[in-house]
Image (tube, rainbow, N blue to C red; front, side, top):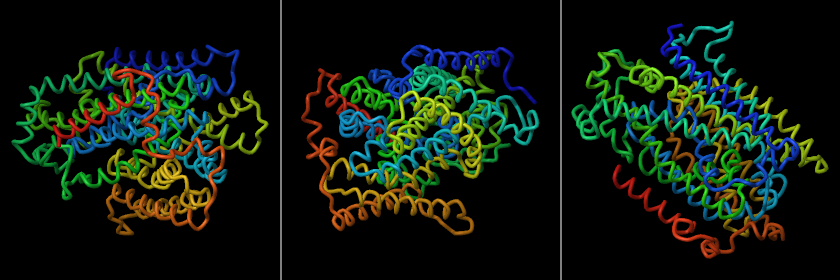
Length: 564
């Protein structure tokens, strides 16, 4: 083992691990006398907008963002920043159209909402998909990336073993088990407490990397000049296995022939499909809104999160671009990341002083643990309410909490086992994005039609979810074995194509199998899309969600205009 950090740095990392587990356990003890489901799963509906916004951001951000976004930027520039800034527009939809319906129904889970709007079969399908996405998409990829980073920082060979276990698998187990402990004991309150602390630590670490690199390169003008002086700067880097680059590193919108595979039209058409599923219909993210104190906090929280989503492009994506320029200027004495995936680790070990290395490493752990804890708690909620209580309505809250804790343990094991699958893809973030593109379309379709079209029937929704799920699975395997199948369809455009197919299915079968809107479903459908914009705003200036939504929209348009 060739340790890349000092004993002080390692001490900071260990202190963080002990501290965050202790904080999570303390949150679980804080209201031990209650111990009921509303506290364990929804924190007694006490969350206010600052906690909601920060916790949503923390649940979204994981080690994947620090590692894989900088990895993608090292190869493609700012192109993958679209996944951060496009989220701002989607969060407006959550605030204006989805959050008030969720709070109005007071459901503990989104599958429960889908049952009230359609039927139990739709609830069952969404529960299964939500558990899959939580364990594989959220936890699995976070554990894999955290393990890769820790291996690099500790200087451990990828093929080495620790205590007879593969090094990567060893770190996956350590991070997974520690996160599972405090999530099991503390429930959602432990998750949001630790998320709030971890989000701050994560941003501090990311800001350190960006600031040091920005100063080292000499500012924005020097960065732009260095990149412009060589349209393919990575081709000149000795020792780097990355042998191609991109001509417009500082542009976020790309043409059809761009090597990133993210042309502007694919982002415009494809991102809303996965964005609405992720930010408006995914239990792991939306659970913070479901636990809001009232509708005002449920609306303002996502908008606060959207402002924070401005930061990742500068603190997670830009470091990869800065690294390219620093290597091009030979600021590392002829050294360079051996692969794009090592970019962030390389910058930590070669740019930061003693102490800061430990802080940023702790931030990496924070990113992984906060995502895992959020997804584990959501999985426990789904299994307890949408599986056990669905079949045994008489199950007590005390029993549900026990079921949730057992689920957390089992979910941790499943996530640990499945996480290595992300090593199959060229980049981790690409693998994550592809998987979401094949899962999201039928869910997005059903929620959109369910919320905005009163004629959408339960039978049509169920057929759409099954059809879309089968098509997504088929395309996933075609893509997984693309060397054999020859599959070569842009994954973002594929999500749009699937949405169109699912939309046709839900409309056709709603007319073939019409159903009268159930009385309990009437409050869950907007009679007019302008209806949620006419209600009482309960606030002035930026405290008014309508004004704040407009500000968010304009801010992101300006950002795209600047970095187009």
